[in-house]
Amino acid sequence: PHAMILAGGHLVCGGDGEIVVRDAEDGSVRWRAPVDGRAEGLAAARGRVYVSTDRGAIHCFVSP
Image 1 (cartoon, rainbow, N blue to C red):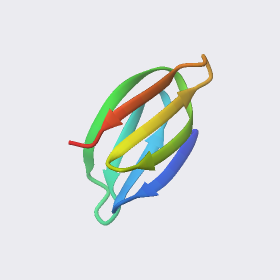
Image 2: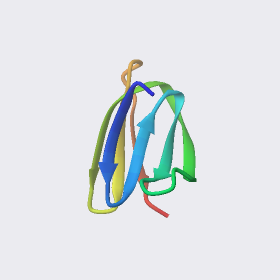
Image 3: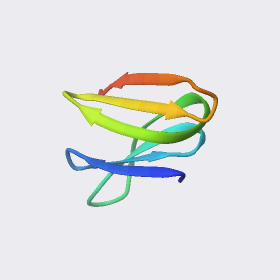
Image 4: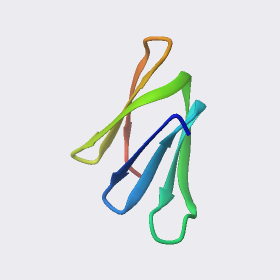
């Protein structure tokens, strides 16, 4: 991954064209989502994950 943060017991990993959210304890994939470009900036607040990419896109995902 290009970026990684810990948010509420989950690891949010930013990669090429996607983010992947994994359980911090067992590493299982909880969910994944596509993004426009390489995910380089990550933030989490109030049940949302914000992702910025090298193409200038900013994505906001609501945790399932």
